[in-house]
Length: 385
Ligand code: ADP
Ligand code: ASP
Ligand code: MG
Image (cartoon, rainbow, N blue to C red):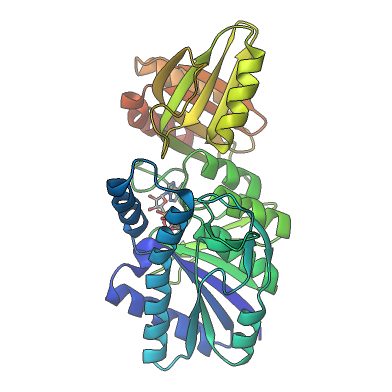
């Protein structure tokens, strides 16, 4: 039987009625003749609540223990969903990431998947069961429980879809697809029918939480199309794939990373730049350097004040706004972005454009206003290419 992997996010399993609604949708898919693997997240807010509790007990909790703690959130969701499925006559069994053979490296709280050994999933599907898997977690090569970074249930779903040769991988959430900007905060945001892996990964990198960047990159490497849609109803959402069909707009989407530290480095401190970029790793979202000096934008989320290192000359809070798409790195988009910021009376702190994106750092208090104005400017008339 063809296999479908469905991933339900935190808001979709938040409460008994929602769990039951998910169970009914899964049962219907099963009755349509599919083998079904369901990946679930912790209930909305549960992961943050667990992290909050840990921080009440220690300033810097051990990363290993944080992983143990955080995986508990997904365990609650997966077992409740399996209970609900069995309760409505749809045989199901739940597993942790470790049980379904998600093998990761040893980087606690932000591990990468190295391999998937899905023997137990195959056995259970053959036995006629729906397999429910706790997302966001695996077991390391050192046999420790690991998590895959925030939003990591998306990565679990893609990894399982790839390992099992699934026909579809559906990422189901409280929004019915990927929009031109976050539909919960930007007026006039429109749903995108199809978007390329590359543009989606860049949107995710700069704040579009609807998909995790790692998951999109993994899907690209494995050639798996992602169907992003609403958990509550079966409506056409967004397909993430290699080459979108039809005419693409110059800018596919806009996104906002609200909380970054803009770090200025002294002129000619090449060594400092190399050291800081290497140490801060994936948290570095933008680097702009000349021999007159450099600026690095570091994602602040989850980073303590003193986590930026000694070389920093000045750290300013800022937000990043990214425009992403086939024409988004071109001069016309850069000019548009700069004009919108200037016309609103604000200053651009840094601007960097490359192949398919323009990213600006702007004052945090002005970021939402700029994003809204830019969205109106770009998506009401997108004919300037
Ligand atoms: P889940 O718990 O289902 O994984 P997330 O909160 O991780 O859900 O992702 C869904 C959220 O992503 C939406 O509620 C929406 O506010 C946000 N979002 C940000 N940017 C976008 C975008 N461009 N398109 C759709 N949703 C977006
Ligand atoms: N529960 C985890 C988080 O909140 C993983 C996920 O939702 O995908 O980040
Ligand atoms: Mg998510």
